[in-house]
Amino acid sequence: MTHRISVLLVHWNTVSDLRECLQALRDYPFTEGEQEIVVVDNASTDGAAQMVRESFPEARLLENAANELYAHGVNQAAMAATGNLFLLLNPDAKIHAGTLDTLVAFLHSKTDAAAAAPRLVYESGETQSSVRGVPAPPALLGEFFLLSRLFPRSRWAAWRLPALDYDHENEAPQPMASCFLLRREAWEKVGGMDEAFPLYFNDADWCLRAYHAGYRIYYTPKAIVTHGYGGTTKTVRRAAVWESRRAMLRFLGKHYRVNTPAFPLWVLTILVTLDAWVRTGRWGQTLGKWGGDTTPDGLRRELERERRSV
Image (tube, rainbow, N blue to C red; front, side):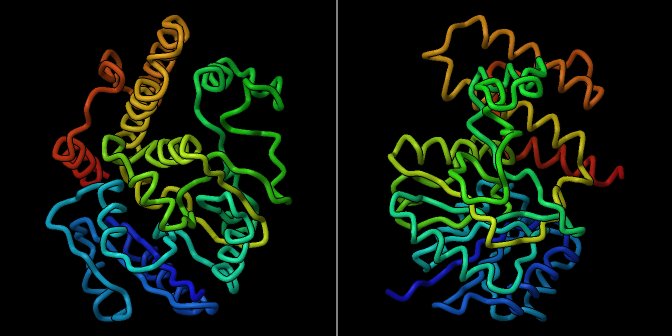
């Protein structure tokens, strides 16, 4: 079977990162089949769309009139894609020679896999802690109360997985979606990104749904990607942190409020809210019941406001 890999990129105002990402895809393409690139530009004001048209005509460019946010952008790109494999790739990620061939071969060696993720490294070459477990209530409580540091192999550490060996292949409950290879058939069975999680926890939600559908997800250290870590959101840090904490509560509400005792969820709501206040300075503001509903227009305005103030 000839594989066709569709690289799905969602971009907002990081034109330099996007250029380097696309150049790496050109320099180190998938050689064991066909490759296409779909770029969704979320109304960037940095000239990215023109750059793609002029410098990377091989990429298919979808231009949105407004910032439709990440989850919607991924779904939009997936609908336009023609491959039997989808590679979710952030603009601040750069593949290396052989990355795509290695990752595709690894995915197809795992018959029960919905997806596979590579080793992510910083520019220095240091390996990033890029794999997490399911953010279930015990794991989140362990994180907030620092039990994950005291007992790194216990269920209290099951979210950040501090004891994971990144030098060996592992099952990876929830890798970063910065570079994430999926089977199209799994995407269609599980469904696309839940747009109730427009920026954060959409990957955690998708991975948990994949597990419920009977799939597994894996990590390999043999495929390597350089990742800049937070390229799109580093200029809107406070708004991004606030939305991430809302998304955490939304995730708990979606997956755990029915079958989990009320007390640990109540404690987590307090802890997540306090954490959001400390990190953003928005003392006294509410995250909303189960994170509330994030409207694209409201979040769009908030992100743009903070970006312009930097």
